[in-house]
Length: 271
Ligand SMILES: Nc1ncnc2c1ncn2[C@@H]1O[C@H](COP(=O)(O)OP(=O)(O)OP(=O)(O)O)[C@@H](O)[C@H]1O
Ligand SMILES: [Mg+2]
Image (cartoon, rainbow, N blue to C red):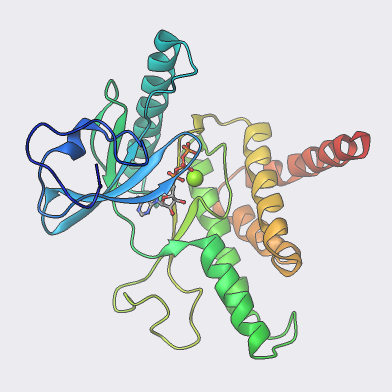
């Protein structure tokens, strides 16, 4: 089935590329669902299933034919429920994450608020490219990037403060939502990195207040920024400085991060 053309009756189970379609998207809504990404585990659709005026993101975890069916069903259920639980907790506590609208853990889907904007990885690459084209020297005039790093640190700190660790903190799992009045992304000239940082993808998250788990989250993020650009890596201290101010106990986590880094270095030396 072409996900953009929506049959009302007798819907087939798969689209032409043989991607499975969750049952809920096989029934008519005002606009057809649109496939945004296909990761290793999940398919992400944009849909207006609930209301014509309300976009939502539908994360679908199809069953894996290579996994034992009972194990597979149990794993999918667990992931969906734990992602929803953590999102609800973050939301309740004011951590910037998408709202949960609906779910069916047995059918393998989770419907959440659609976040406008782009993931930080894309925005950061666009920004770096534009500066290169404009001939701006590295390290010069990077207040915008410093600002973004600070907002990232603050958001991660707020999440940790409520007892949640993300488990997969990469620049693809952080979104930049334009603030009201800048819906066209970089409509405000030169302010490409503006916007509110929203944390997404809690599929590997857990509820923990262990400093070690929090430090590993920061380490993963540091590596992710480092693989984007060396300049972004050197500015990671801005993330850490904002993180350090974001909750009581953050400084212990920063200390722990040094141990985690050391272990990481040793491991990479051993190959
Ligand atoms: N609520 C949302 N609003 C807008 N876009 C989203 C939303 N959630 C996810 N996306 C987009 O879809 C992509 C994939 O989503 P997500 O990171 O949740 O899935 P995944 O990495 O495939 O899942 P997992 O790692 O849990 O198996 C994101 O990088 C982002 O571009
Ligand atoms: Mg992801």
